[in-house]
Image (cartoon, rainbow, N blue to C red; front, side, top):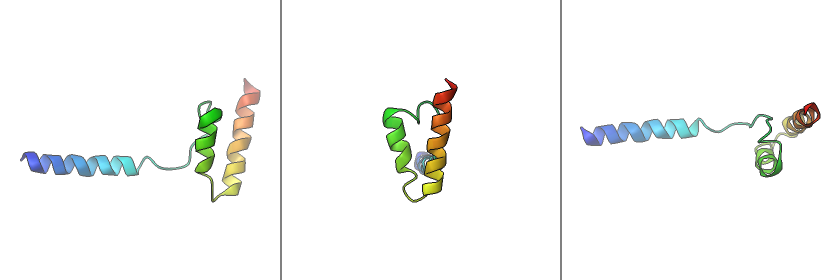
Length: 64
């Protein structure tokens, strides 16, 4: 029983962690300093999406 429960928990955690990937959204955390640096690495193969992200960050900075 305990072994089966452990296997189910490992599979569930794996699915949850795999689903965490994706493109970051423009926010105050992702548009400043290290957040910007790590966010831009997600766009290394999509220049159009990278430019759109930078534009949204600029809009957020102007709104403040």
